[in-house]
Image (tube, rainbow, N blue to C red; front, side, top):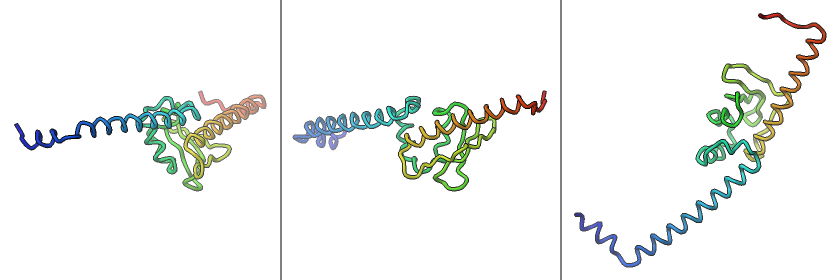
Length: 149
């Protein structure tokens, strides 16, 4: 038995303060859930992340290269991004196998929200892959095929 703990816990009004603090904490949790849901509604791929992971991404939004651990959860087969010209412009992405895909247009991350530049990155990936496929089809039609098997 610890008489100090019992004395402290039996102070008048302490239970009311705990109940009040618990209610305030619930309001904060609901506000945070609403904030995270708003982020997810702006970029649906964020639904693949837990609340803790999403908070980590939001807190590091200005440093896109520090988001590497979560990229494969957001974009399948993208393991890392490369920022060559500036830390605020993504110029290429790499697969887990090490294949590098140079984007047709760099994606700016500096003055926009994380969900906004992730959506822009998604569009840039689509445009880049589409251009690569068109180029491959055109090369095949011209007979410029390298036999590698």
